[in-house]
Image (cartoon, rainbow, N blue to C red):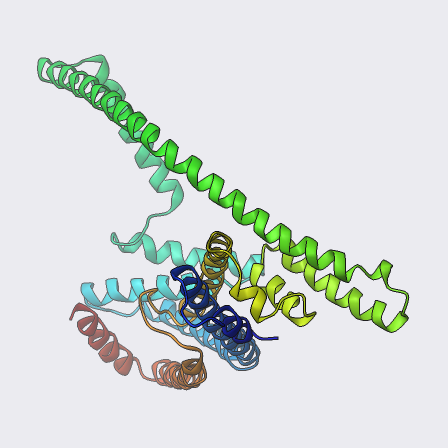
Length: 360
């Protein structure tokens, strides 16, 4: 039985009250989000299947070519190059090593690539230095600070006094902020208690629907084997829905087993509908979160911003475009490897163009 059936029943009076209208709207929104979630789940399953079959092999080929290219660049770094071109080459080599190292499992190869990185990182001041060098610098800095403290000048003593005064003022402001926060928390306490009471009443509404279902569907009370099997399945669905706090599924089950009808839904009190609506709002929020989680995960795969728009129907063409772009990139890397290994002048010209392009 669908939610739309429940909605029709809920509106089976000539004029809907505000509570009935809210209930109907929430069911509409939940149905829309459920459908969107189903679309995302289907699109995601297809995406993972094609990703493993098409993207992963291309990634492996990309890393293999970049490893060959960085080793070639390392050998070509012995060529006489302009200082700016040499620095740009060091950056390219370190960038490729970073990419390749992330997937290397062999310790010997990892150490070899790390040595290449360290050699070119030390040549380029803009790249992170080797850990041991950075640690030595830190120790030197700490030593200077220590010597300064033992022989403080009048200016330094004044600075220390000012710092102590600033810290005292900060503590005073923090205490004032804490007092203001405490007042706000006391004002919010009444709202929190009211919300807790509403949550409790909503939970009781879900429990009441479940108990009514359980009393009717309990398979142990059914003598007929076929009917017992049917009720067992329905009871399992009821248990799952109740454990998840899914009021709508419980109401759909009631409709399915004919525990409720148009008269029942139209006769619900506004207070009961209010409690139902509160539960449905939480269900709607949870479904939206699940949809957003899937969507954001896929955006990350394509390098998109969380603010970018993405829909299930866009996934297939985007995946095809990604495959095409990766294949084109492999062609470019392969061509560079072939040409640069045979023609040093072509390599130098490309390196200069690449540096100028990156400056722009």
